[in-house]
Amino acid sequence: LAQKEGLHPRFVNPYYKDVTPLYAPVGRLEANLDRSHGGERIYLCVFNFGEWRPLAYSYAAADGSVLFPEVVVESIYRLGSYNGETIIPLTPPLRLDSLSSVTKLIPDMQISESVVIDRTPDQFWIRLNTDRSDSWFTIQYLDGNRWVPVRSDSYRIFTLNEEGEKVYHSADNLPPDAEPRYEISFSGLPGNALLYWGGFSKPFSVRDNQIIM
Image (cartoon, rainbow, N blue to C red; front, side, top):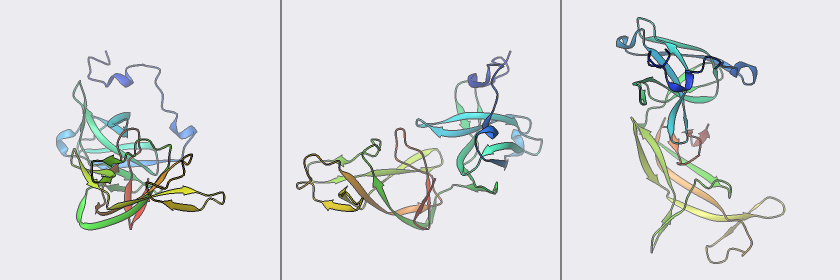
């Protein structure tokens, strides 16, 4: 019956129960959709493994407003509908803070952000791109439903000494048994944008040149 009514397969199991408030701090996520979505089942989604995956659903009121009363705070979500095959995004990414305030993550090309990010050996999804004469890292930002790549300005290779301090190396003088780490610099990132390395990485944003998860 649930499938006939168009319910996403994740929620067909009648024993599915949300226990989020038992293990994480939660807040209220409220959003306003177009009135044409009044009465529709709306899904709360998180970005995971390269796609928006539903966590919960609610129903939009006649005026298009929708409420999710218990949602993990300090996280990024997106609301969408289900067409029987896939999730259709209805909002830009929404960042919910600890006070239940919602920020729409829409790239602002009038704001330019810069950030330096350390890539550790376990972050295999952050990949060094190379050709015959150059090498660089790439990050992406979400513009509508399209991921736009941005190339790094520069990067430096470093290792950590016994005191945990950075020791910088060139590519040809790296100690043979050392685990290389990378200090990657980006500039010209659009403000208020959702950023993503790719693969299994978690999306994030940058504000005032600081990373916000």
